[in-house]
Image 1 (cartoon, rainbow, N blue to C red):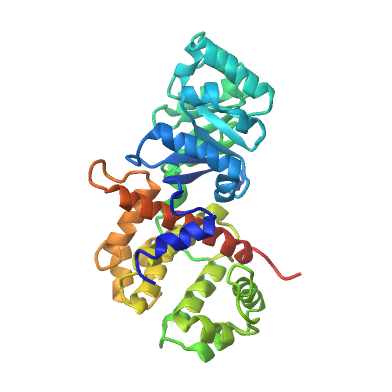
Image 2: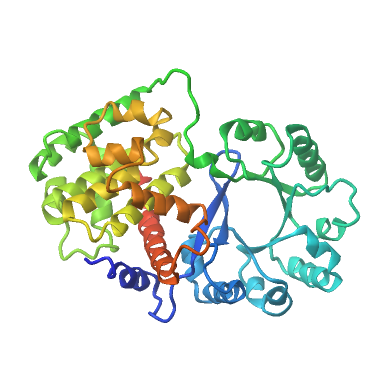
Length: 420
């Protein structure tokens, strides 16, 4: 499939028409204290066009269900303009899983506060994105604190003592507290000790620093499997032999490939048949995916993020030769291997005979896949470098991202299941 063809396939997957391009948004997870998903935040990409128009389109996608599919029906917050909040929020009153993010300045707008109060009374979740604004006995923000159910604090701007005291103050008021901008593990561990409902930030995608890498038995077993999948470029027969003794892995893989998502003309009854039908390289990548799901102590949103990167990287490599497209998938998936395995990337890759093109992208940021990964990192961060990105590139990335999230959510559903 050509690079341009990636966009129509994504549009078809979403049920959109060519005139209804997917929204240029990303979904950012908030994790509860058990590192399970608490909610998503929908964030618009920078420089993606008229923000007011994008917000109206976002409300329309709530109505037609497209945004609900993107967030899998989970609790979701998004930021809307004052005009939309005053005029067009009736749809939110019928979608109690969708809520609104508010800035502290909204507290000084009496008409808006009255509107928000009515929305809250009708069941619309409201979150005050307080940042580092002082909240304790602050009359200026009190009108909002009386009606919001959630408050997000900026952990990157508040010192540990203030973050603790403010969290405890809000918790004592019966308000649910979210720590935002938690971008390193030291901050995350401090937040674990606070009365928080959820934690959000880049910590999820970063490996935790360790002085001496130690791989548990299940991680060593996983690395042995990955090594066997790499050595000698195994074909369909060899792939079947490698996983034949792992009933759970085979069950997950065959359940996924035989699902309605792929609409196969006949049921595939073995890993060997699947490798013949889809190709050995693709099935090998999917075995990686199913095997990584066996790391049951890692946050589910982390594996979903790895799957999204893998699919996006493969789509961005559509103009490369077929072999490199499969390698691009591996590069995207393995870009979070250090975080998934809880060990430094060079230590993990030392155990794997990966192609030089993949290892150089992951370790050195060089080679043919490094620019693809950089595009994905920029998309995840909502930073497409102002003035340097053409609108058609943003539209294309939005389509690829939408397709990748739907694919990742589908595959994860099978990766996470167990035989009855």
